[in-house]
Length: 184
Image (cartoon, rainbow, N blue to C red; front, side):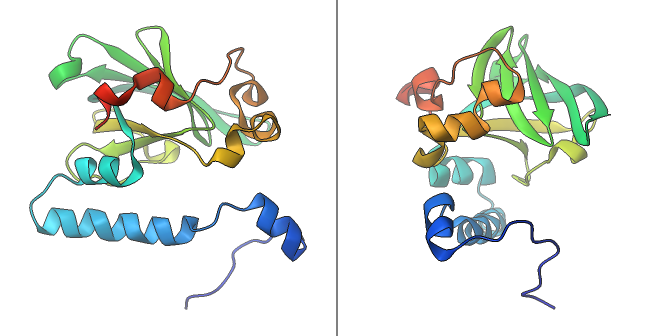
């Protein structure tokens, strides 16, 4: 069955496609799946492997304490509250979402936002957990990774920055929020 499309929305010329696409995303998704599988087979830590491969930052480790969802204008919107464990014990992280993870807020302070990627992973499995799959009691590790540089331009931020989604915050790259010392 491969090589089928479930939906196609926009007709683009080759030039438009080259300007707007982020090359290698499908290959990267395949690579990450393989990395998770192989790291688990070798009894390694898949979260650490993902952090290293994506040059990401460990944002939070915890247990999902609450998830609130609603459908608004055709979007699955809501937030998840995660209570800290291990080094994050006593802290709380809120992830706000609209089909995707948009903003991560630790104890009232924004620690990551779109267009950078906020990724929720199973703490032990390293498997990604989408907004639809967030459930009370899951033990998770939240990471953030830098987005493609195209999304950091004024035009990119107008399309996918925090203000586009209704957040009255300026975008700050995740690496500026965390610095090299916190990198996974």
